[in-house]
Structures are given as structure tokens and as C-alpha cells.
Length: 571
Image (cartoon, rainbow, N blue to C red; front, side, top):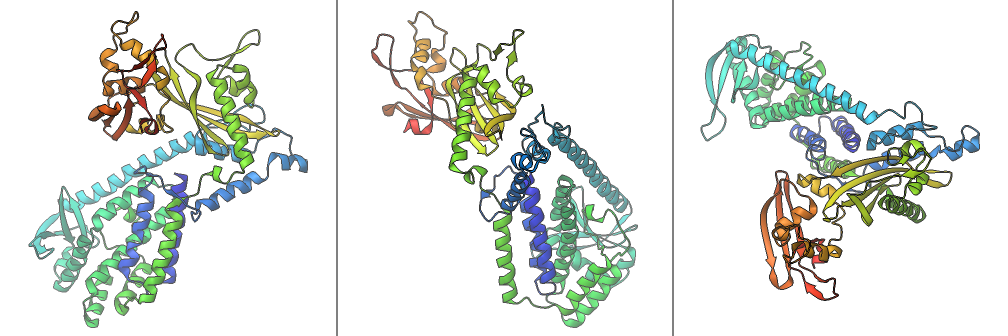
């Protein structure tokens, strides 16, 4: 979200600068089209859950430098300056980390402000604002629609294209200007009785609204309103909405006059001034209908464009395209992950800390976890202290077995550890632990810890997150699984049918829930199978093999059961 807010804000500023520099020189259609980039930037990554490409050109690199500047006044530097003691926290950084990760920290040296869950506070405020503005958007448009439709009378029909499609034109009292509006699936042009009585004004009003229709401006207006509701907190998004609405009118005027003579253009311009409502309308930016509202500056800009009707030079187009291309490269990307900027020594230290932490957790080594935590308060969210002062943690089952984890260094302050909790089955329960770390007195300490458990994997999104770094090694338990499936085994759990079918074996071993089997491909010669599972949000593929293993007598056997493997193990 932060990436989207900052990048889209920069993009809006760039487009506003292009409008100012190329004012009167750029084609109004091109100028209006530039706002489509803002719509894409606001919608494509957050709303469609697409991750931007990493690039050194990204404006987020500058944002990262600002963070580093704040961090630059480090505890060590403050100690040298005599302003702080070792172990104190930078409140601004603690709050920034909380907003970014949602992880809270507490304990000695932590300010009251840093101990607040600011991410939750921000989300609550955002939700209240979004719901309020969404309701207001709905009320404004329903009220306007009801007011117009109740007092309308049919005037005529006009063709929209050469295929015979037509739009109805209605006369409506209470309108302050002609408009294009949709109501219960019907899109129609609405004019005032004053306009209907003047043939010339009626003609130009209809041509203007038909141009809105051909440009699909109603659809764009709906999208603009929805983005305002979602990003209501960003003043630049409001500026973009207002200016894009003005550019929408400019593009529409251009579409009407581009084939007109100078005389007709001047007549159209005079008519436009008469039609435009200059009264202040506070809700105009939230209105979906294409009403002819305009400020004095907006009207002046439109009339000037109509009067001059300048053709855009090729050099202007090339210059604008170059600026836009560079802007897209800077704002549709994100900064490379922090670990790429870290020194090799720092990476080695962080990796060593992560491995030590994961090993200690897997082995229920409470003493090591305690020592790696910044304070006892954090440790008590993970383990316990007995009455006699002894430290302990964990339960018997399920629990990660030795080295049953995978580590991802997210950045210089965040580690994700993917554990594979097992029972004696040994079915896997995936979980992700996010450890926030900070260097204190020359050594890394955990300052935050949060968990996400996947007891049942119920969607593609959960599957992708739970097994982001791959599956645990099931092959080492081939003998156990085969023993469970053998009918003549002393101990039989009746799992033969489950484990000897690749689809049900994968569901059992990975704890999938609600997944439909959409395809199963066998390679009998190579003892391989590929199963495709589908949830409502997408499909995933799982590779399985029938391995060879040594039984309790040391005899090598070909398994009849199926084992989930990573893709590289299947090849």
C-alpha cells in the first residue's frame, strides 16, 4: 500500500507538471489519456494483488533513502553525542516498522507511542473513511438520479453510430446543465427545457454528450469515484480526480470541434459558456453523470482550446511520450529488496541469527530463544518461565522436527521462517513466523515476533504463502508412509487407499482443504505423477513420486505409496 501511495502521488505530480508545461500544446485526447496511467497505478497492484517489478529507477529507492536517513541518527551515534544510552529505541523507526509489518514491540526503552499498533489504528480510520465516503457517493448519485428521472419527458432519439444504435434524449426540470446519465441500465442524454427550446444549443449539447458516450466517460467516472473512495486519504488523488474530470471535458470538446470550421467553433464556444453551470457544486467530483460544471479557470481553458484548436507538433508528442515512459519506469516499479543493499557481513550475521533462532525453536531450546530476545516480555509471547525460574516452550505434537524449516531474509530487519509442524502421521502443518530484528550492543536481537498458521490450506493464496519456499522433505518418511499402507503391517491405520492415490496422498500430506482435483498426469515408467488442484482463486500443481526405500530389514523396496516432492526432486 505504501508503495502504491508514494508512487501514484509522484505520478500524479508528473502528469500535473506535463499539463502545465505543455498547456495548449498537447492534444486534449492525449492529455486526458494520461490519467489512465494513474488509474492503472492505483488499481493494478493493490486491488489486483500484482507485485511490481523491482528496479533501481523506482521512486521507492528514494523513500528507502529517507528511511535510512532517519535510521542514520542511530542509537550508537546518540550515545557518542551524549543524548542517549545503549539499548534505547528510535521511536520513529519503531512506528514505521509497525505500520509496515503490523508487528508490535514492548518492553524497556520502548515509548508509549511505539507500543501502539499503528497499523491497526490506520486500518480502522481508513475503513471508517472508506465506508463513509462510499455511502456518500451512493447517496449523491441516487439523489441526483431520482431528482432527474422523476421529472423527465421524452424528447427524441439520436443515433450513436452507423449501426443504428440510438440514445434517448429527455427533457428534465431541475437540471443545471445537460448531462449523460445511466439509470437502471438505460443510458440517456438529459437536457434542460431552456436548451430543448433552442435548436442550436440542443444540437451542440447532444453532440457534446454523444462524445462522452463514445469515450465511455460514464464508466471512467464510476472508476474515478471508486478510487476516490478507496484512496480518500490522499489529497493528490482528489486533485487528480478534479483535473481528470476537467480534462475529460476538454477531450470531449476536442472530439466535437475537430472537424468544425472556425466560425462553428466560435459558435460552439459561446454555446458552451451559456450551458456550463458555474455555481459551486461541492459534490461534483463524486457525481457519475457528465454534468457541464466548470470553474472560471476551467471554462477559460476550454474556450481557449476551442478558439485556437492548435494541432500538436510531433516534437511535443515525442517529448511527452519520453517523459511518460520514464515516469512509468519510476512509478510502476518498486525498489530492490533491502538485502541486496546489505553488506555480505551483514547478510552472514542475519542468516546466522535466523538459523540459530529456527534451530532453537525446532528443538524447544527455550534458553537460546530467551537469550536471542531483546527482553523477557517478548520471550513470554513464545515460551514460559517456571516458578523456579526454569525456561520451557513448546508442546509434544504437532511440532517442527529437527531442521524442519526454511528461511527467507526479507530485509535487514525482517526474517520469515517457514516451519513444518508434524504429527506422528507424519502430516505437515505449515506455519510462518515473522521475526523482526535489530542490532543492539553489536549483536542482533529479536524485537518482534508474529505467527500465521495454516492448519488447513483452504485457497491458492494460502497454498502459495504456506509453501512459498517449497515443500518439506517427505522422502525421508517413505518407509513410515509405506508401513501405514501395507495391509500385512502389525500397525495399520487403514491409510492404504489414501496414500496409494497421488491426489489423496497430496491432500493428506499437505493438509489441503476444499481443493478440487482438476487433473492427474501419470508417468508410470518414472514412477511420477502431477496433480492439479483448483480453488476458487486459482490452480496449483503438485509433483509426487513413488520412491525406493530400505525397509526395517535393510532390503530396498519400491514404494506403492505416493510422496509429495518439490519440482527439482521430481526431475
